[in-house]
Image (cartoon, rainbow, N blue to C red; front, side, top):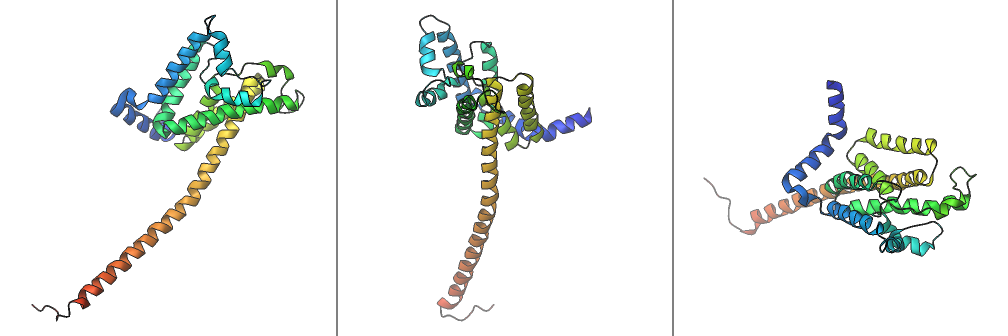
Length: 254
């Protein structure tokens, strides 16, 4: 039991403290983007289940691989908040509230939106590539998937979960999410599962870019600090020398 608690502290301790302190200080004010996303998803769910609103939601947020690319790209941001018709809406709301909320507190709202969009866009673009490869290719898809309506936050949730876990050192959690997505594809090979893998690959590339920038930037910042320190000491010595020579008076004797 102690070993499990110690592992949990090492795995999630930093993330837990970050989220806890933000919520204690600001409460729901720490989650404006997440609460807005929950409200938008609820509203779109309500509208698309009405006779007068179904076609409207399809026109603004439903993405299919058979659609023109420009139209799919235009609809992709909003498609993230359109719940899938064959899944309970509470599942999408819980995913957004938990994963988006933790991400917003830990990495900021704009990074959360960028990563969510990148993950969703990766799945959208993969569907087109997979269909062009065909069902018999290793990463291909059957042509019938071109007509599947591709909406919901699942790809964004998977991408955010992996990025936040990696960013806060919860590497086993990031690995577990990745293994679960691979198992999903092996057990039930469908469009959604493969899009999740595409989202993971896109977010993994983002993690690599961030890691490379951090490694390159750290020595640069260190050299800048050292150079600044040498310059400051040099200026101080020059100032001391000028003070000693500039008055022309003999030194003070006690």
